[in-house]
Length: 431
Ligand code: GDP
Ligand code: IMO
Ligand code: MG
Image (cartoon, rainbow, N blue to C red; front, side):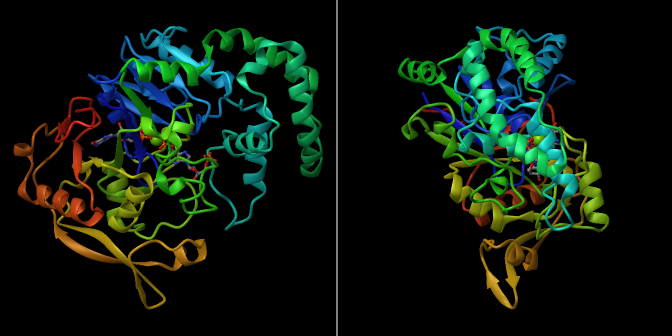
């Protein structure tokens, strides 16, 4: 009996969706605890592809409870569209299988508009490269104590009061940007219309989760983004607007910190980043292009080309520490097939000084020059390997070196997008 948190240990898109889906067979409850539909999690099951953004990846397996926790920011119109798409793929989603925390803040159309307007107005160097989904402005309203939350949809008078409070802030802000004031009545009508679709899923998630825990149910916490996009420990200001690291998992659904038994970090065998910001091991040469092509590195949410680079052991050692990672799942090892030589970053040179961690200031991060260690590659295919015996000796050596450098063992190894192309070393759910 154990509860497992899955977190991204780089800049997102490490393959969390695939691993959460794989692990969800062993879990009773699968919950999202932060972020929103900026996430894009891809599952491939017997050749059929599912792309999930706001829904937990556990929805695809029958008989599980999926939960959207209070740490999430929720766009209710997007959610209903996503539910419709996933239902069309033959997945059943009902209030018995999906629960949304009543205290989840909503992403309103004005948040997306503000997010995109700021990005368009930003100059080079200040642009974040957000997903344009309104995530930042929605979290700003949450900490500014002016969110409209799921529970507010249940009562027309409360909803009006909450909308008025939000607009007191947004209308002057919009004026400054040259936007019209919000059409209050139209927004209220939109919210009243969506309320009927959302409210059947609303529940006191903190209570349900505590009851599940007492009943000995296994909980799988599905992280979104990656530790380097964390608002505190990421490459600030080029980050998302929430805590994404493992410590957030309990707070994001209403459980105590003791509920977390095991933290699984998801780690890509190389590095990618989508959006702006420092990236010490980025490759702008043929190797980078090859990683992008072999790894199909295009964003699941925005379709943007992901920046690619060598594996950065320095960064992953750091993110394993800030999330208290017990074991990692190393993904996309197959993408490295056929490289003659592989490089791993083991430290940085900053203005002539050697560092074994990434400094906190963005300006210093941008000046960090990676110090590499080289390893021989392998020519055989590892794609679809399902046991260690299927891996060439050089690939095993690469995995072992990664473990040593990040000071964390490999619990799972992934060798293709397919659910079953996964090698189990240590079961995170084992007692
Ligand atoms: P997430 O956001 O962390 O869930 O990751 P994404 O779904 O955005 O991106 C990961 C991509 O890599 C998806 O297209 C997955 O299907 C794919 N993927 C996951 N694991 C592997 C793997 O081991 N090998 C290969 N080649 N692709 C993988
Ligand atoms: P998953 O869960 C990769 C990045 C954006 C941008 C920054 C801020 O699929 O790994 P935001 O819209 O959150 O304000 O954008 O964060 N970003 C992601 N990058 N994977 C994600 O999610 C991401 N979610 C946000 O590209 O750089
Ligand atoms: Mg993704």
